[in-house]
Image 1 (cartoon, rainbow, N blue to C red):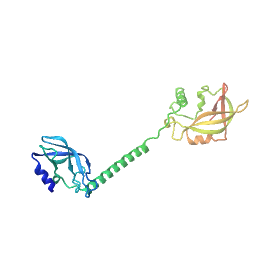
Image 2 (cartoon, rainbow, N blue to C red; image 1 turned 45 degrees about the vertical axis):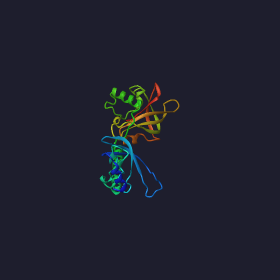
Image 3 (cartoon, one colour; image 1 turned 90 degrees about the vertical axis):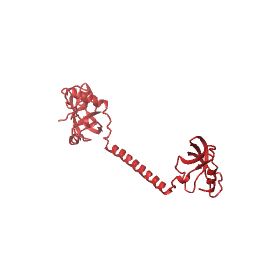
Length: 255
């Protein structure tokens, strides 16, 4: 304890132990070396305050760093006389604090990486989102199931344009058509009979028994990739049936 501290202690008429809660600081002599720092805050104790007070910080050891409460000796007769009991505080260890901060930062980084990895893995493991089937597909499947054409609810080798025509092709006229283009129609896997089954949109150049040729599009399901490769070959001539009541209704005549 220095001379000033001993003189302050002797000047106290009614000293009691209390506490000092720092709220701020300032430098009374900024240009002085070594620099001095004054702590400002709230002093309280038995029969004292809370009142505002200030005390010189112990910059030699940094003992006020990171502390919310400092032990003090305060004069009840004059609370402005307050002495911080620095000797009761452990010396400030800057190395230990820096090491602790580094460990905390490393732990936070590990947790962030683990959280990010878990989220990425969940994205990888999540099943791919499948768009709901279009309205025409739901209508078609329901119609085919109701008529026992497709009891299992799966697409088969059946021309889907029958939803627009009659339930029988017996009165339809045979003709030929050239497959100009084929495009796959996306459907959820549960609507298909197997992993390689597909629903396709066929663009056909139809040559009717009488009249001028015309182009139509029909939807056609295939049970397997092999079946599709045998039939749906662009440029191939395919046998078809034409609805006499509506020539736009065309069905592939598949054996």
